[in-house]
Amino acid sequence: MSASPVGDNLAQNLAVATAMVAITVLIHFWGLLTLAHLMNRGGARFRPHETRFGQAGLVLFVVFGVIGLHTVEVWLYAALYLLLGEARALEEAVYFSTVTFMSLGYGDIVLSPRWRLVSAIEAANGVILVAWSTAFFISVATRMRLMDQDWLDPPPPGAR
Image 1: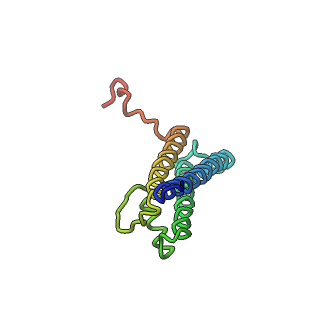
Image 2: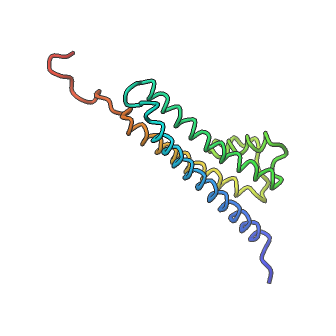
Image 3: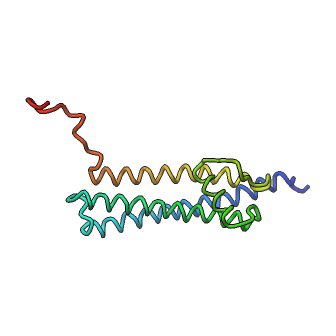
């Protein structure tokens, strides 16, 4: 007895999507470790604890590093859509992948029913990776004490 075409398609979608999730998670993991390593090595140059310019430099470094990681991940999905024949041109593939990865889902470009489950899993993958990046950024900001403010503390006696 042979498997149904629907079952085969589901298995193919899940296999491809699982591979892409594994690849992008590993890229993100190693990328964040590399960013942390570079921050440790470059901390003396930026001097984030001494100057606001150093803090701004470090913040920009982290933001652009994280955006770089997401760009690589989006482009990998775009390359997959081109390989699967689901996009006609690179610009269309990158646009669709970006909109999907960020869970915007405009709907002006859609995949065929054959591979659309991959794009749904890309959206879930993107949400997780963006959340991970946000947590990383918050941990960096916290270590730099950028989030420490005394606005919750009562004013000293005699101050207005």
